[in-house]
Length: 142
Image (cartoon, rainbow, N blue to C red; front, side, top):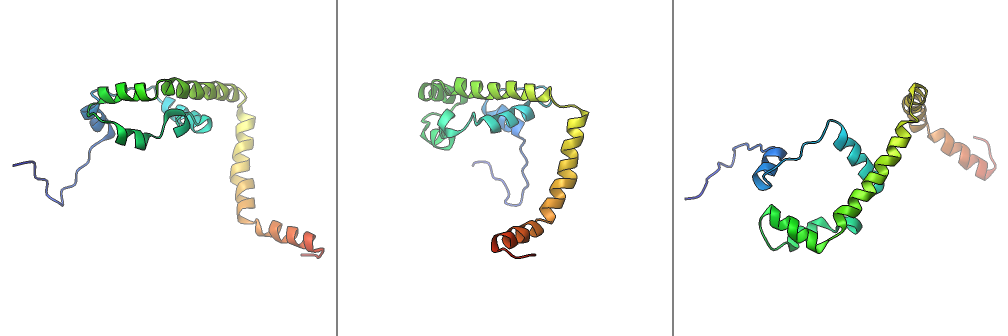
């Protein structure tokens, strides 16, 4: 008889546990680095399908079972993809480092002011600008 799990049993499995069970190792990253790399990747689009392939299709196409087989199969199918993605993300990281050097208290205060005051006000009071623009186009006053 196989494993029987009651339908009402709550089961919580961490991402780390799944990775350890399926891959056997967990990558450790210094604090904040994955957040920065994720942001750089979003801007660089380094892991888009045109760079690394359509992962949902590739994993369905994958004929084997183990992680090591997956790595070998993927690298044969998409031989330069990991390098291309790495280059794109690293280039963006370098651009972000340059931008970080331009950030000081004055710039942060300006950004906070713009976010809290300007964007709140314009976001909540934009109807006046729409009415003004329509009135101008129609040649009438608001």
